[in-house]
Length: 240
Image (cartoon, rainbow, N blue to C red; front, side, top):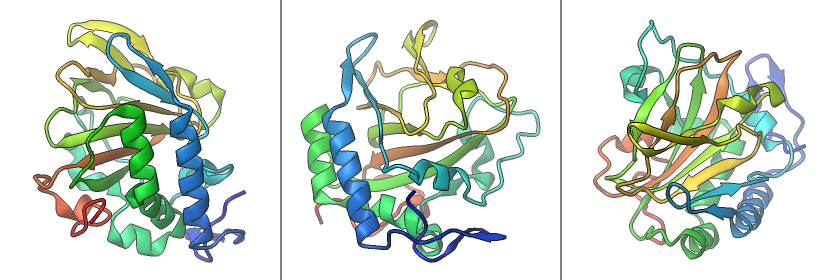
């Protein structure tokens, strides 16, 4: 199992170290390169990819145990930005505290991972920045259909499923805002990938969420991204 590099992931429990930077970063990078290179492409209703075995074995479990509180929805949902004050990112503070988060950010910043993403998906990541959000969705959460078009160059929704009983909690994919097409399976350490465009409609239909639906939302964003504190390296675009 991949463990944190000598720091506690839970305030009350330390995890045994088996990989430390830069070995952990290398392991994450290698896993991402292999996973993205073998991603399964689907053209319906728009081009997207299903990726398996995103992280090295055990890392998704470590991420599920990060000590961040899930947002209190207060009965309001439909957009993540409705609860901006309760969202968590792989930012400078988080990455300095948790070596696993730092390794993931480093891997997505690396030239090798950027190159394989561009080669596989056709995304243009030049001058973009790594943005990683640790999302925790509870019962009552839903997302209206949206495209991610604008300042996002690439989207990778990495699932941290806590058991097979969460399989129906995957991302909903739409042909257009009014027409649901299908749903990705919410499988641990798997991901849905797409390059944002005018037709990349996706969301989360209202349904019961048992426990917490955890995921890592990975985007490469442009210089126009306003909330610089959310970025892993706010002063350093990829390939800088």
